Image 1 (cartoon, rainbow, N blue to C red):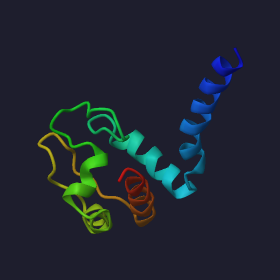
Image 2: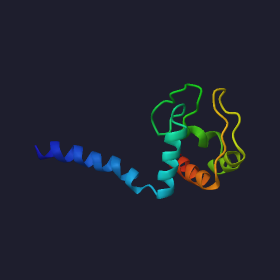
Image 3: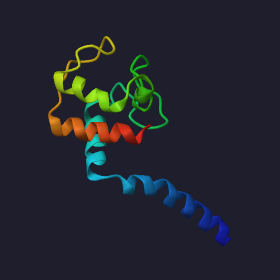
Length: 105
């Protein structure tokens, strides 16, 4: 009986620990991605992108070193998938988003 209680509790604590350990910068980056990108892109480690042609953020590091995306984010991304809107981030937003993307590698 105690095992039925402790095992799920331990699992819950293990799965919550990474979220609790995220830095404020990573949390801001995740919030930015959630508010601006999640409509099309998967912004987590497991779910598919809502828009099939939009690459999941967890795969970006296989295409580009995450650090190199900062310049494109600063200058503005005008390409990407055909339905992607043009956008340009402020320096603090770039740092936050890159910090979050690093957590998905």
